[in-house]
Length: 464
Figure 1 (spheres, helix red, strand yellow):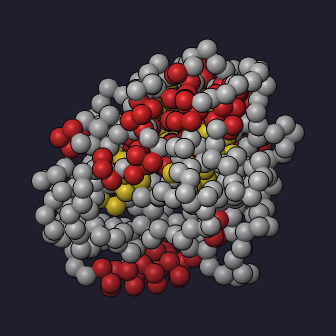
Figure 2: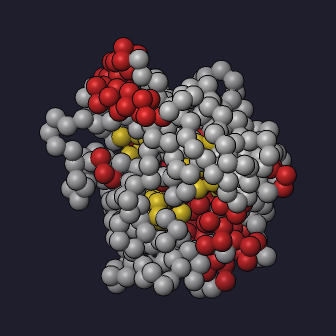
């Protein structure tokens, strides 16, 4: 199905939302004081980041982040960005970051923690440089870019020309929405990038419970697809499954810089986990600059936290939970420089949903994904947080009821949408509202349940 039909469906969905008087966005909710932003970044402790940083912080490696825009002057990211490029065709340039998604991914990779009085959000590889490449991803209530995969292809080619070693794509589009010709062209561009030794990481998607649709570019053969897991190493229910999954990585309750009034957001999803694997590759490559991309990837695969069922890989966790600490301390043999460690000859998944997924019943509604970042703070007194422009100022219940009713009303006309995985946040100690005790309904979908742990619970999958 072509983009023209997808565009029409989006117009109908947007019209129905407006007719119903629905505003989908964050709402005010009770809040409680929390620890500092950095202390809430559980993944840094779980992955033993301070120990890794004694060996390397990723210095000398450029990670290209292909995303929706970037807040270039965020305190945690000042000095981390290289001159980027805007492929979106939208006004504002690379530094226009309406939704904050690209900022969050950059923060998870390369944040310095200099914001919030020096206790801001740290990236897993704070020594790398980020090449910001803006594309038009579309948003809820708007038309999906008609050149989504084309812009990604342009950005990949540019990143390779600029010397990026790692490319992070925390974006995706349903295979059924993409034109086959666009997929074929992008596949060729990615193959060319891999031939030049560049590693391309992409999220596999957050719709496992909604039919588990295949998403591009994450499902293309030359891409390292990444799923999400929680602090226990348990794969999240939203993380998609299939042969495209190569790794899982932290992707639940993630704290990062963003464009909210507080400057920090909290989120979950395979976008975040993709940033974790991109940063892991940068750390290993910085420690072994003479290695090729194939060798870096092979070591990450060999040192990943494996499934406890004895399988080498499976469609839930791929080769396992990424463990850069083990890759740095006990890398083993990196293997041949010019041979990819990924399975050879495995075709990209078809556009049909995975048969292992529970697809919606015929005629059932497919809701619009709503993943607006939640503004968060640290160490502030327990008060009501300030409502943002699109927020409700009173009880959240009427707004939630309206959102639910509106989504049910328009869900039947929505068929395909660019998947977006955002990060939600935390602000300055005394000048911003405190961290909500829970995600406000109607703003960010509540954290989904998890599957059984893929590794023994006594084994930290990210560090041991």
